[in-house]
Image (cartoon, rainbow, N blue to C red; front, side, top):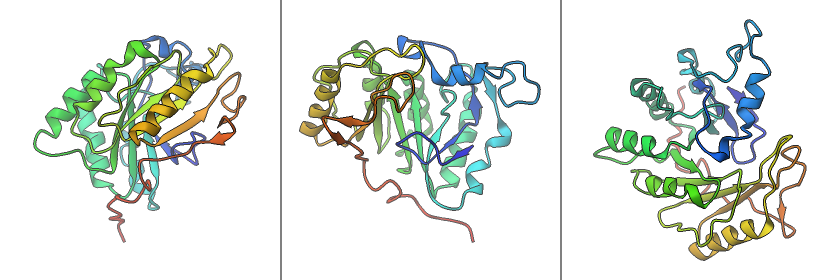
Amino acid sequence: MANNSAIEWTDATWNPVTGCNKISRGCDNCYAERFAERWRGVSGHPYEQGFNLRLWPSRLIQPSRWLKPRMIFVNSMSDLFHKRIDPKYIDLVFSTMETVNWHVYQILTKRSSLMKAYLQTRYADRLVPDHIWCGVSVEDHSAISRINHLRSTPVSVRFLSLEPLLGPIKNIDLEGISWVIVGGESGPNARPMRPEWVRDIRDCCAKAGVPFFFKQWGGRTPKAGGRELEGVEHNAMPREPLENAQNSIPA
């Protein structure tokens, strides 16, 4: 669990699962894999198994140790809806989030159909608590089916992470979407993001009244290209992030 995350749209990260595998071109230069594989074979290191999938039941209680409300990105080093994760373990993660309800949790997946099926089952007769935000990662137009899956989930705050943005997404349909994040790829093999792709999405957000957050241009390092789009930083959020958290902080 990491406090003071370098990810601009969250405060902290929580990884009850680590490791993953590639499922689309957006995964080709995965930052999490690049980091984890540096430590493969180092005995005693949390990533001694590299980027192989690993469950961490001991980490399930970590959010309860933070008494100050914050936004928490869930599984920044994995995907909670990986097909090899037992739904009973996902239940434990959601139970933690439901109980430790003074934080806002941000869940992001590329496995949108599996998230949709899980949420429709767990929350068949109610909405996901509104301090649990669910989103999908979309890298170009070929992956927009993930947005349709997200729209079918019983979630109050649905968000899109268009990062790394690898191609245009013209006239993106934002019905039912609460927030859009856009970012370019970073790392030694970063693929470039064209300004017109970003402008198109920004303008669609403005037309639909959806908050737009521009994370980075990317490049050799995440901050290499800066965060300004036409001289402006865009930091909009769905609402005051902790506005609707339960704040049921134990005495």
